[in-house]
Length: 216
Image 1 (cartoon, rainbow, N blue to C red):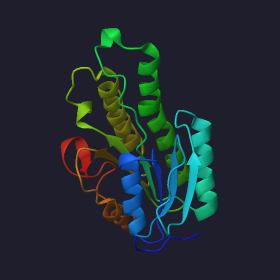
Image 2: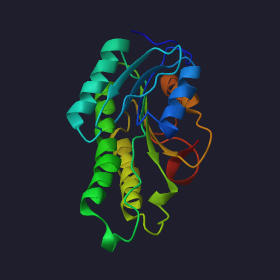
Image 3: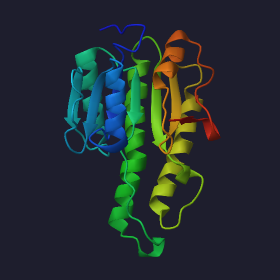
Image 4: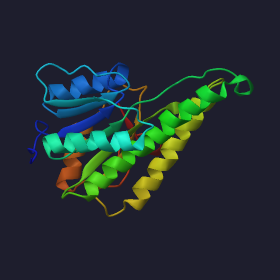
């Protein structure tokens, strides 16, 4: 199914879409007429009047992420934007006292989950004509350590480095990768998609601020 030139008709996937930032992004995209693929550990709510595909997906399961992406493509014909938003903050406390299981879960969701979503989307974009925009949600914690946040800070640093690797290996390929800083309040994603679709995007990593972070 072809997408239209404007925001209406674009297709976006948001992980971790059942609450908080993910739910807010889904509502904002829906208000612009974007068709949505929404997934989370619990079933996401669908913004009123929105064409959508929803699913309960464990982002640490690469097969499940691939399956959900395929379902969105089967329904809408393509994916233009993929936002890896699912994440965990816990455990919080001294590293010496951290529960190894909770620490591992943080890394699995915040790093492997992002890697699985990024890979699924990159493969999809390779398989079809035209570009795509990938957004991985990061944080100032990636570059400024916060006491007691060893798992979260380490995971977000890994996400940023991994995104640079993806962008570097996508040079000349139609995947534009961005970092989102969740402390900020405005995300001009649809404008970035427009640049990508018109071929005017200037670099694999786009945006403003530190290390190519896209403010929102």
